[in-house]
Amino acid sequence: MSRRRSRVNSVLVCLGCIAGAALGTVGGCPLPGLDGNIGPPPADDGGTPSVPGNSGLTGKFIGAKECSICHSKLYESWSETRHAKAFERLEELGQEKNEVCLACHSTGFGQAGGFADRATTDALANVGCEACHGAALDHRANVEDRTLRPPKSMSAEVCGQCHNGYHHATFDEWAESNHGRVTAVPAASFTAGRSLNSCGACHSGDFRQGAFIEEETVPDSLLAGKAPEDMNAVTCAVCHDPHQRTGNAFQPGAGRDLQLRYVQIAFPTPSNSIADATNPDRFNLCGQCHHSRGRTWQTTDRAPHESIQGNFYTGEMPVPDGTSPLLPNERTVHAFVPKQCSTCHMQHHEFVGGEPGQTHAGHQFAVVSTAGCSTTGCHPTPEAAAADKDRLQAEVQAALDDIKARLGDPATWEYSSQGGPAASAQAGVPEAVKQIRFLYYYVLHDESLGVHNPEYARAIIRKADELLTSIGR
Image (cartoon, rainbow, N blue to C red; front, side, top):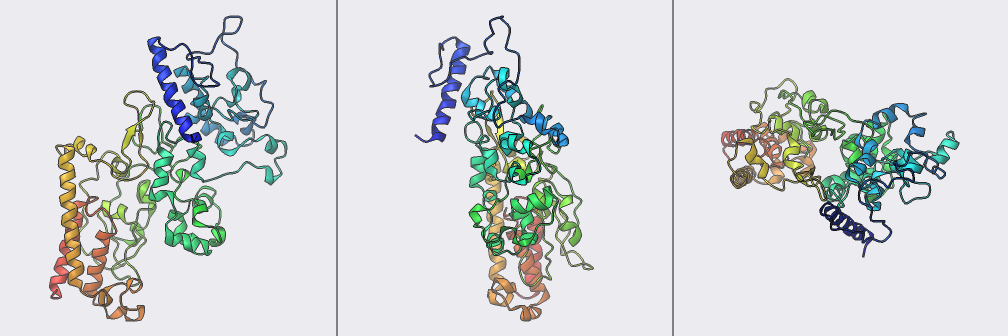
């Protein structure tokens, strides 16, 4: 049996015991190595609970308080997070002796010098600095030796040690999503030592760590020679700040914060300027990457980037400076869905082993259900919402197919990098055709087939049809 499956089974056994204890039917723990105590820690000989102490801090672990001597601001902000109170949650549940739980609710449990109990290693009774960065005794002894400094990693596996299928499949879902891998084309460029500064902000967790978190100059050669599977993609820490509560989540629940680096919801005023369309500061967390890269209908080398969801949702389209919009702006009917993108793309799941009704946000980023659509009052039932979605997407796909067919041979109208006329011959492509192809790809590359902004999608299609008719196609 795998270690992973074994631990999952252990969790299930423990949950059964918890329920049994509540009914008075459990007399001892069936798991090897556990003492079966479910409830408060035993009293000492004097009949009072053991006094917290740190006599057991004799190994490599020193505790977060020691880190605060130099890293005071990080310590203060971390102290307000749920990681700093993780062990308290076990105590509330009477599970502070449960070895299956201690691995993720304390620091260094099961390792030499790691957490043992409140009485001897109280400084490690939390998810402290060393839970993620490793034991720090050697670093504290010689802070000038850079080789001894605890590592700073953007790897999702750091978070995945605990945020996995034992309770909530956050890491497992993320690993199967497109965020879990570096997209093939930019990955090849990164390996070749190119394009990191132009593409890394949204395709490389390694670049984002250096440029956005550390605020350092990052060379394009940072990932040169590295295999794509060894690169960090859009990992947990790209979106979440592990060190502090940020207040950026919208109604996260009592006592929660989510520690998002950017606001969860935003309401930018629609704009067709290139400067606005490409400005991530206007958008929510997802829109930090899911926004235009500034291509317009006058661009001839390639179609709009496949990242325009934020603009499409807002109902805006960049146009060349000094020119009129191709069509009016159209704010989406979904603009006031309570949590915007995450409402549909991060639907909640039941929390395994949690309290009734306790859920966690899905991290596969796929729309797995239309159940939430009926709670807004727009769709009477989930089934009706699913039917509406299917009809809209079929309508939009048919319209896109019609536009492409009426444009004719791609060799006469496509972008130069996509099988169309060479760069030197793009000037010969009629302006109406340039506008039509841009409109076509704007809908196609939103990748929702109209769902993000139904009326805007229909307006774009009508404009393309009008232009096609004007040139006799």
